Length: 383
Ligand SMILES: [Zn+2]
Image (spheres, rainbow, N blue to C red):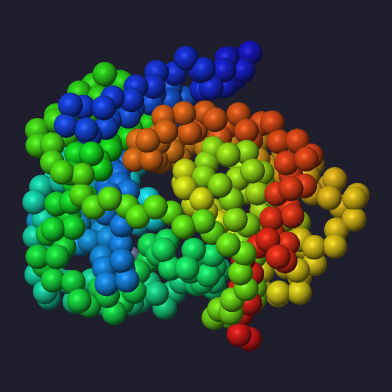
């Protein structure tokens, strides 16, 4: 009985969730997850108003690397001494910096993220050093990540650049360029702090406000060019294996949730298959990769009715399990809530969960067809 009660508390539907937009345009989101053991504190520098071009391709990734070291380049060490861990990533939608923190350190974690909003400075030497680090990351990229970048290029004709970036463009970035980019990305309208975990909502919100409120409201920056609709394509990539990408509308569209559910079901069925999707409210790609292109082709085409029914059943179960796992994890809740802030849709997570719980056979069958020849983006490796 006690265990059941604890489980109920952990899933408390009344868990407090506050999402505040400050007068300067910055956003703070806090979600109390009473059953969680640690908290996740995340800073988002939304990219909506700072689209990259071929000349600046990867500058956000480069800035992320330099920025997360902190103004005195000592943030990691300071956090780790207090039992906190920092990670960062650059996606098409944002630079995201996340700190896992014990609940009693949430305010210190928010303050540490606040340091990253101070005017940024670096040197040509630091830039060159960090490009060498990124070169090593490039060498370690998985084949599905390389092929996925090719698929985006083919589907969107270079208008939705891969967030990893191009080393050649990074080598052109000067300290002043990165100062300017940081200035633009830290305009309050592009900023969000998102906190999830066993936290005092009002206290966390107060600390986030103290960090965000003093920032002067500024210009929004560049206007993003309108999105070019994606198109089916065939391309060759650096092998091994092959990748198939379904073109999907932005979340929380049920077609997109269904395509991701199909990708999860394919992964469960075929050893070695990888599924990729990066959440966005813009059109995007749900991709599946396998080291053997023939296995991948057979996995999504020429299935009989019984196989499709079985795949759909598995997709439904996996989508529900995925949504449950998302809302049980402070790191994932903070990420989704932050994404809601920078993408301007406050009900993204809740609607995604509802769609994941209501996938019918029709939408799943249609989602499977999106991976087929003629509708998909297909990338084949060179060996
Ligand atoms: Zn990196």
